[in-house]
Picture 1: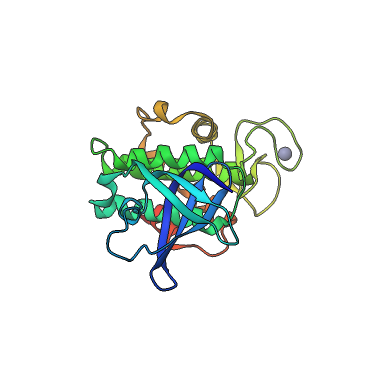
Picture 2: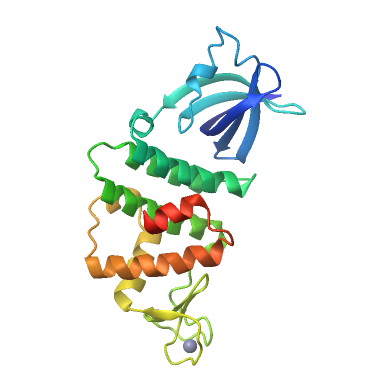
Length: 242
Ligand SMILES: [Zn+2]
């Protein structure tokens, strides 16, 4: 059996003698691994197409081990590969995807990754804005992965609130709950978080954020990532302090 699918090339490595193994992210199955036979032999037409970060259309042959029967590039995001800063941001995001293993139906994550790579590939966007996009990406991505922060009700007493304290990994709580947990979060930031999680990317192109709000957001973001990821990866260090 074989099937066609779109995919992002996440990673590739040598496999057996002259083959290559590809880690691909697909909308319907999440991550799949597929072997390209004789990739290292001169004259293999497919292997040259399949660079990391590329969006490709591929034909997968199902077997004990999936193999690649055909491939065509849809977008190779050239500008990512030719700029070290873009590349390190893209690699960090890819690392998060690789850590998730499998994943099943992933249409929304697929679209999210595409939007982000498109932004990183955009030469008219400055580095500061790209960093902003990556941070927004993380909130969106984690929200899709079951870590959506609860920002409408207190996570302890369920009262409807619009600000209070932020409890990492969960959401907001009333200020008056006597607990050492949580840090103060103001209404502006709560509204901002709701907005970036909900809104589509095109609307984010004109996003402006005050220095003060940005500082508060960075602080909350660090607590959020730390509560989700036990071991801070290279990726997160970059997003947090880059
Ligand atoms: Zn409460």
